[in-house]
Length: 171
Image 1 (spheres, rainbow, N blue to C red):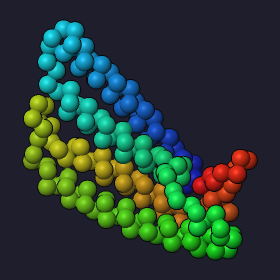
Image 2 (cartoon, one colour):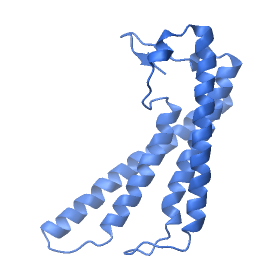
Image 3 (cartoon, rainbow, N blue to C red):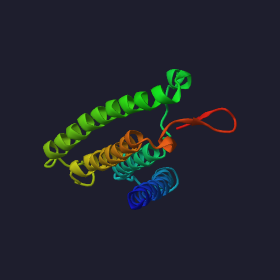
C-alpha cells in the first residue's frame, strides 16, 4: 500500500514538473518571438532552451503517462481474450516493454557519458544534461513497469485492462 502511494506520488511529481516545463516553454517561445518580431533583438539561446525544455517535458510527461497506462495501445487481441489468458498476455507485454525500456535506458546512459564534454553552442551547457532527461524518464518508466508486472503476477485484477461505461478500454 505504501509503495502504491509512493508510485502515485512520483508520477504526480513528474507530471507537475512536465507541466511547469510546458509553461516555461511557452514563455521562452513568446519571449523569442516578441524579441525578434517586435523589438528586432536576436534571442540566440531560445532555441537551445526550448529544445531542452521540450525534451525534459516529453520524457517526464511520458513517464507519468506510463504510470497511468495512457500510452497508445493496439488492443485488438486483448479485447478478445478471456481473463485467464489476458493476465498472461499482459505479463508478456510488460516483459517486452521492460526489455525495450532497459535497452533504451542503457543507451541513454551511454549517450550521456559520451556527450559529457560536448556543450551547446549558445549557452555552453553540457549535452549530458539533455540526455539526463532520457535517463530519468526511462528509469521512471522501468520502475512503473516493474510495479505493474508485480501487480499482474500477484493476481491484482485492477492491473488488467477493463471496459469503462462507454465500452472503451481503460488500461
